[in-house]
Image (tube, rainbow, N blue to C red; front, top):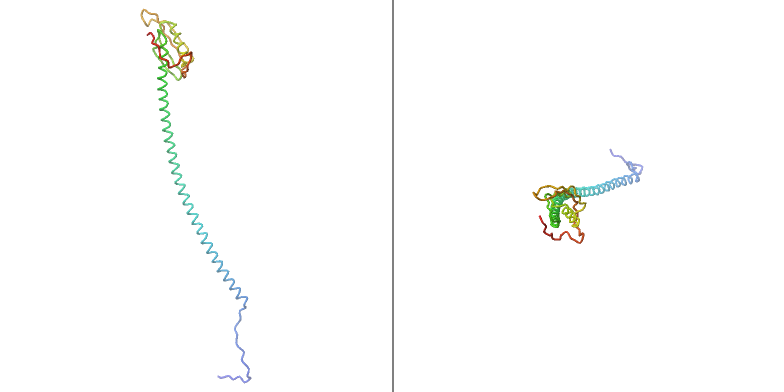
Length: 205
């Protein structure tokens, strides 16, 4: 059916519900804020991930360095043990060498002292620490006294003590005296104008 407008007026236009401009602006700003927040969070996440990866790499490097240092420490400890063993062996060798040299020097000093004493000979020598125990035979008490004097003058013996001097008949038809004595072994030093290394004068046996 056809309708005719007899009044000559325009018909009103049908309009839908209108959306306020302020509400639209708020929606746009909210969406922008959400997007910006997501971008910031993404950037921070990547940054923290990179930092965490760098920290893990540094930790791995420190652990490797720790392992290397522990191996080095074990090698140093092994070296110190070997050094201690070698030093102990060196000390033993030096001690044996010193005792050997000291024994030779002691025998030389005793031989020199006996050589300066007439009518006297030794039957045994025993050293305990720094103490030398001497047993011998002499043709007279004066020979024993002379031997003690020579020991004192050598500068090698101290605290010389005679334990016994008894007449015996070890040599048939001759008067002899068996004696025992002790002396402290010291370092040789010149005494009475004589040196310990002076050559011995041959004596009677």
